[in-house]
Image 1 (cartoon, rainbow, N blue to C red):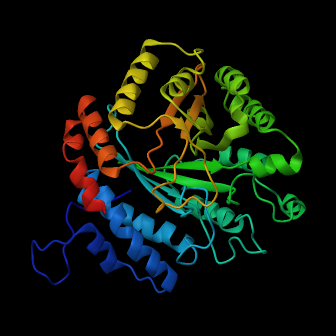
Image 2 (image 1 turned 135 degrees about the vertical axis):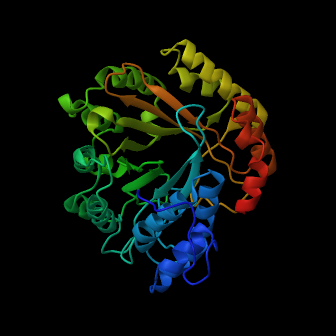
Length: 390
């Protein structure tokens, strides 16, 4: 994304007068729709704080706030939201996050998870929220984002998403154990030089209407990629483990990078209610199938974070009607196994369940962990950064 400089000067305010990135965007946009105004007013300040805390330049902050305003805000539907989305546990159509990296990035990467909505989302005319999702894809193509590639999306959507006759045959059914109808979502990693787009699908309803198992659907998805993206060796290793522990019964969703297939990553997300260190260790090594010095070092880091957070062990379910304000609620472990062309071994990411825990303790644990792994500049001020975002 192009930008013109490090500061923005208010017209007529004299040389050297500067305003914040959010003020700069507010001065140059006009939002006439009442719902869009409400979405912008309630979410843009938080995104502005996230970008600032991740140390994006002044110009980058303006660029990405502008992108968010023009691209996401018009697609959030009525305010407050009526359709419970799959992108976040709370059902909101948005999720902001920050990805801290030890290597390869000059600063943390801000991310936006997003499910397009409209007035029709969740109604009889679009119960499964597919109309705005398909329309939004066309908008992404018109933006001409560098390296954005739709080939994998065009391959996966027919396999994972309900067509019209399948929607009709379901007669309003939803996946067992959830209150969501979501079918597809998007993610944006706000890189220094471009926006990295990710696609997500939730294929459980597709399996229900076709009678195909989740395991079989994943097998078909990967094997049908053919020469476009050969990652069969890694998939078979992962598949054997998931079959062994019955993980496909808890498979949540599927994700990929919207780039050239040979450079993309496929991610298989699931959840596990056995919140214990032994289960995390098993997930991390795929039941002992994957062993290496790098994997062992990663497990050491994970154990340090687990100990710092002091999470109580035990069973945790993912109940109906998750309420972000209900501190008694709990969530299971979420994880993903990632595969890509040219790598015969999957990699694993584990998302520790912190909902219902003491926020102060969790933030202090993450702050200390960042210092342990060499990111002192972010760990030292993390507690204040989080407080500033509230």
